[in-house]
Image 1 (spheres, rainbow, N blue to C red):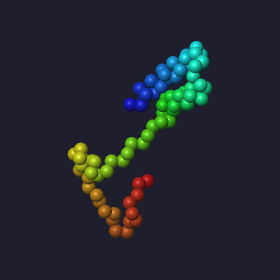
Image 2: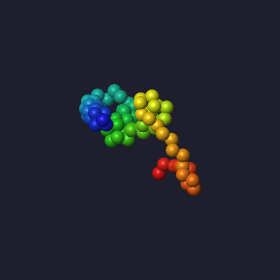
Image 3: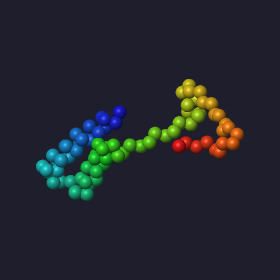
Image 4: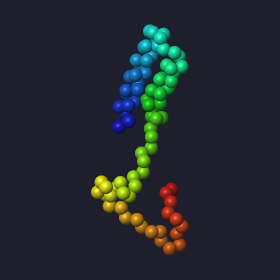
Length: 80
C-alpha cells in the first residue's frame, strides 16, 4: 500500500522540477522544503509505525484476548 504515495511523490517531484526550470517565482527555501518532503514520501522515510492495538480494541472487533500470567520462576514478560 505504500507504492501509490511513492509514485505520486515521484510524479509531483517531476512537476516541481519542470516548474523550477521554467518559472522562478518560488523562494529557494520553500521549494527545497517541498522537494525534501516529497522525496521523503517517495523514499518511504515518512512512514509512521502503526499503534499497537489494546485488548479492548481487539475485543471490539471480535478478536478474543487471553492474558496468560508468567510461569513460576520467570521474570516479567517482555517483547524481544
